[in-house]
Image 1 (cartoon, rainbow, N blue to C red):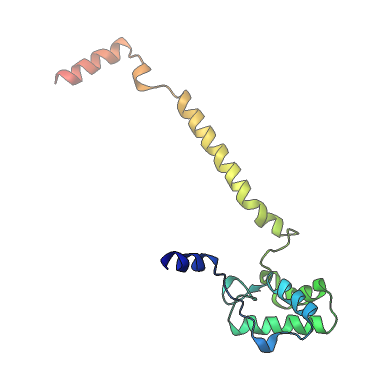
Image 2 (cartoon, rainbow, N blue to C red):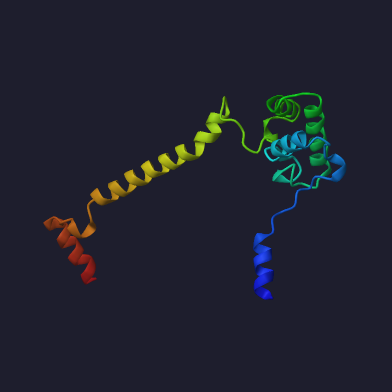
Amino acid sequence: MKRLALILMLLATPLAAVQPDEMLDDPALEARARELSKGLRCLVCRNESIDESNASLARDLRILLRERLVAGDSDQEAVDFIVQRYGEYVLLRPEVTGANWLLWGAGPLMLLIAGGVGFVYVRGRSRAPRPEDASLSPDEQARLREILDD
């Protein structure tokens, strides 16, 4: 019995938050709307799509998306309308264009810079003279004996 419960828990997937009154009568349009809403971010819940979110703003976005599709917009036109209205932040996977190149490239660039700095640091430490390798001049040896004898 416990194994069955564990298997069911592992197989359980999160239910979509789409309400029955939001669904379109046309199954093809509804499938398009569901697919598009998986790529749009809920502005309240953060990294959760509007398809999964129960927030009222996510519901409004789902309804707006469906209205645009019923009005005859293509998938790209409907998404562009929402992006124009709410900004590029509404996309779960923002496009890699313009200023986003800096954001997409900053992580790998910082990793390369840190690796270079680490390499130079380790390389410099290996070339530095070690204290046991340094030989003392006769004057320094005499002064050291004086200090140690006192």
